[in-house]
Length: 130
Image (cartoon, rainbow, N blue to C red):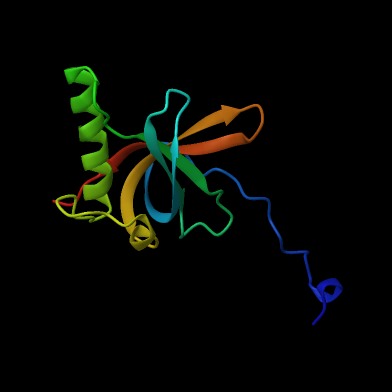
C-alpha cells in the first residue's frame, strides 16, 4: 500500500477531552531543560489513551533548586512527589525518565484555551493510589 492508497476519510482532528472528569493519563515522554532563570525542569508529555482522538499535552514541572525560599521549596517538592506517586514511581531511588514512559495514572483534567494551540488539556489534580 502506498501513501496515496491510504483512506483518510475516517481521520479526526485531535481535541481536548472534557474538563473536570477523571481520566487515565499515560506518561508518553519527558524532556529535561533549563528555564529562563537557569533552573532545571522537566516537561512531561501526557495523553489520554482511552480517547483515540484526544490531543497529547504537557505538564511543566519546575524542580527544586538550591536557594529557593522555604515555602517555594516545599511546594516544589510536594508537586513532584504527587506526580511521581500518582504514576507509581519510587522517588526514594534515582529516576530514569525513559523508564517512566508508558506508566499510567488517574487525574482530573482541565481545559485551557491557547491562541496558538487552541483548546488544551492540563492536569488539575492527580489521584494518588491509596
